[in-house]
Amino acid sequence: QKALLFQGTIRSNLQMGKADASDEEMQNALSFAQADFIEDLDEEVAQGGNNFSGGQKQRTGIAGILVDDVEVMLFDEPLANLDPATGKTAMELIDDVAVKTGATVIVVEHRIEDVLHIDMDRIVLMENGRIVFDGTPDALLSSNLLIEGGIREPLYITALKYAGIEITEGKLPHSIRS
Image 1 (cartoon, rainbow, N blue to C red):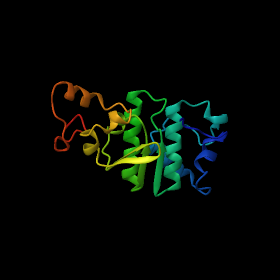
Image 2: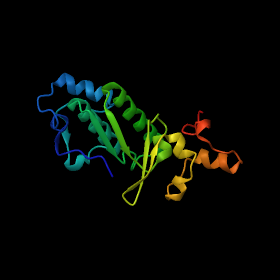
Image 3: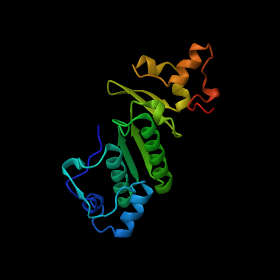
Image 4: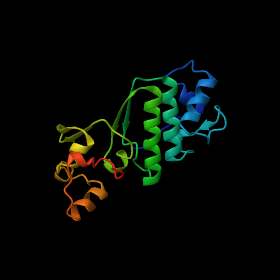
């Protein structure tokens, strides 16, 4: 998965969901999305946004969501092609957008450790098109469902298990800070 922009301008990309968005709305959205690399709304965008990095395309896309003022946001593999540090920053930005807009956020992602960098209300784990788990991050991490499903559990969970520490829901394993 990769972020994608359409050939045209920053303005035309941001106005896809709301054609009458004002310059002020677009500038505010770009600012909130930390897209400070954009100096001009009429800046050219190459086919597929190839003149922008993956992180820049992602932030510009998030700004477009903010301009459109949606109620539900779906991020499909938002961390693909991002290094871990940039992935954590991206998850923080997604969380900030959710808080600012009050929108429901759905994140489809395999990199669970990076997703858990922010608080998630619930995780749905699917296997072969079936839901095999629907619950809290703590309940999932205190089970063996990730390993059974072929998904790498967070390294700190593996380290704790290796040290002989039992992982239980009550120990709040969703965060390395807990």
